[in-house]
Length: 173
Image (cartoon, rainbow, N blue to C red; front, side, top):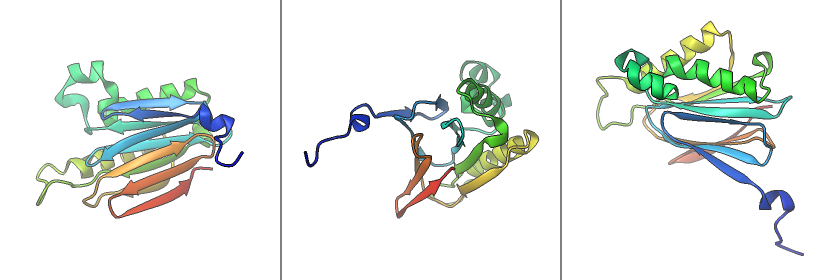
């Protein structure tokens, strides 16, 4: 029957990751999405062997500004969010040696100059922590002045990056 949905399409599921949050999955029916990465940085991780992955949407580089908030919402900060994210990824059978990591966001979206350089500081903090963990970055779209939206399809390892002026496709296999 033309136009009839496939069985997998009927059970497809989108998981939306908010600011300062994360999600991991090993369900091939899941698409992980995070919207409006401005100065925030999205860390997208995928293991092509286990077909598992996740997205972390960090808001700030350092939890020292609010230890109480970091204790309640570790994914908000790069320094507490990345270790939290890596532990969750292990739970869905992602192995660090196979992990493919893509970074998006870190923009300066305020009108004029950003005196706090939050996007820049977020990107630098994430890269520094990934370096400590010896996790290579397979790709990135950081900086600039535009928001980004990210979708990761676990079944295909397709990463879609949407900006106001363009859409780009990557494969994390």
